[in-house]
Each structure stands twice: as C-alpha cells, then as structure tokens.
Image 1 (spheres, rainbow, N blue to C red):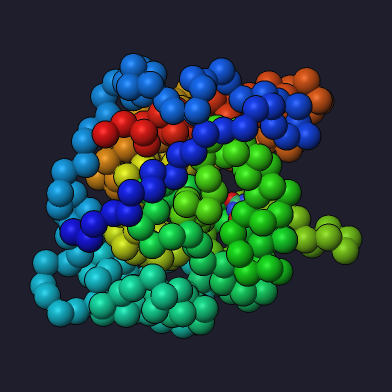
Image 2: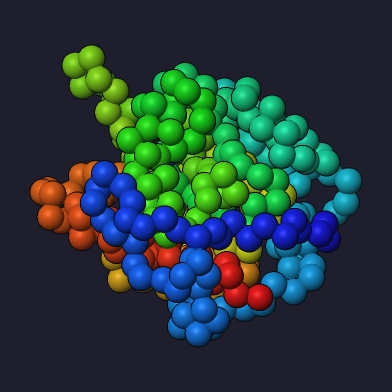
Length: 290
Ligand code: URA
C-alpha cells in the first residue's frame, strides 16, 4: 500500500472562530488532542491494518480479473433513466482519480445529467485521511463544478476550522454527482435524489473510496448515511458515533450542514453548529490517534 504523507489533517484550531460566534470546544494548548480524549471519542476504533483498503477494493471487485470493476455488481438500476452506459461501464479498467473524474464528466447513467449543468466530482488530496460524503451538489456547486462551495460548503468550512481540521487535507464528495432540482419561479430548488439515482451513481463513490482509502469516512446527513450505512441508520440518534463498516477503518455520520442553515432561529442555529463542530472534533480526535 502506498505510504501516507506525515500530515494528519489535524492542525491546531483557532479560537474563537467564525461569524457564527460559536467558539470551538476547549482543547489543550497547541490544539493536540490527547490520547485519552481520542480514546473517549472512539473507544471501539480500529487500527488500520496494512491491506485494509486493498481488501475493501477487493470486496467491491468482481472475482474475475481484467474486467471492469463494478460491471457485475451494478446492473442498471431500474427507474434511474439515463441514456448512456452505466457508471460501471464508464469506470476505466485501471482507475485513477484523474481518469475516473474525467470519465464522470460524460456520465448519462441516470436522468439527472439532463437537469444538472455538469458532473460535480469529489475533490481533495488523493491520500486524504478523511473523506466527507454529502448528498449531491447544490445550485452553487452545479454552476461552479466543485463540491461544497455554496452556503452549506461555507458553513462546513467554518465548522471544520473550528474543529481543527484543515479542509484542504480532506477529500470532499457526494453520493450523487449531479444536482437534482425543481423549478420554483426563477429559482432552482434542491430535490432529494431517489434510490435509483443513488444506486446508479454509487460506483463513482465506491471508486473514490477505494482509491483514496480514507482512514475516516464521515457521512454528512441522512441521505449519505443511509446510502452508505443502511436504511436503518438514524443520524439523529447515532450521529458522532463510530460504526463498524468495511468502507473505512472508522466510519461516522453527522448532520448535513444545510440542516443547520435551515434551523428556525439564531439560537437553534448556534446550538446545531456547536453539535456539528463537536462531531467533527471527534473525527479530529480519532485522526490524531496512532
Ligand atoms: N450539499 C451537498 O450535499 N453537497 C454539496 O456539494 C453541496 C451541498
């Protein structure tokens, strides 16, 4: 397995931070998270053993060799529409992030490509130790072609900063790569992707996970959590906990940052932001564990 760079993605957090007025939780000077705090954050955390990512990749790979990675596992999901090859067919035989990203540009595997301006693929370092997975690009992301650059992305940046995680060291992506929207007057209003669209798009995300091999995978919101952790996963009840999963050595979920923007008043927005930062601090603590 390729050697990881020494950067952990965790750096001392600044305090206080952010126009939200939310202060980051107290942490030891220098921003290092103690091992005790890290253990408390994730008592059941597994160590990453060499070959874990390889095994994950193998799990996702059909047993025969030399053929496309996902072809056997992902027949075209019924109801997704689309008039192009399946994602499985688009993924190069020897995938690399760059070639996979290029292949995704032409994705017509479900009907969402007709509504979106462009495919919004994940971004971040190839060896990122943390991967954040959201639902789908929003209006701003659809226009810019980059994930989490709109209002929810700005809030996410602030929360990461407060938690002491450098966004530049994080790989950020979505379960669905095209913006699904409904017109309301002149505005394009977010519409939730359905199961077929999520299934059609899924091999892109599986490939990103297999190539980046994050140590920690964080689902942002119920769509990502249920797509990756199962329909019975309840973000409201299980947020911030690490759950067993083959996807990465440590897998957790928290709310979607847009839910904080939708909070009914300033006070609940502050509370929700504080809880979101606390969940991300658990990620930072787990990251700083050996
Ligand atoms: N919401 C998401 O889930 N992803 C984005 O990239 C932007 C908003």
